[in-house]
Image 1 (tube, one colour):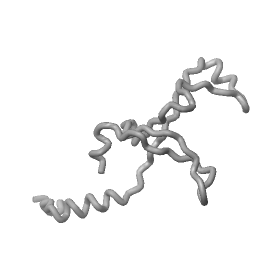
Image 2 (tube, rainbow, N blue to C red):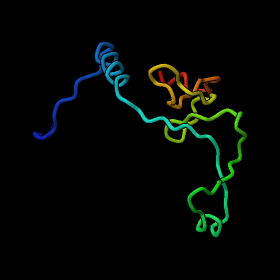
Image 3 (tube, rainbow, N blue to C red):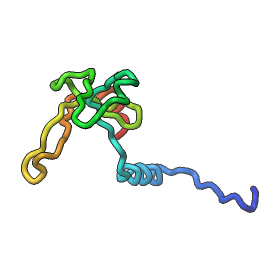
Length: 103
């Protein structure tokens, strides 16, 4: 063993469980996609305040929820009530495939 190399400690179930609990406490960014647009470059360059950019979705279509580029769920947009009135939120309607494996 090199003098500059720290000895390795084998993972034990206790250390593994502790590490998993610590990882679960880390905040993660989630992206909610309401749709996509494909304007021409010329149209994009001419955008101004009050312009409307048409999306490929309808107002009542489900939104998609991503972690990175991985789709994890779908849901519907909602407005919070009470102390959080006016805050935009998403009510999950479907958890997609492997997203359950994230927990």
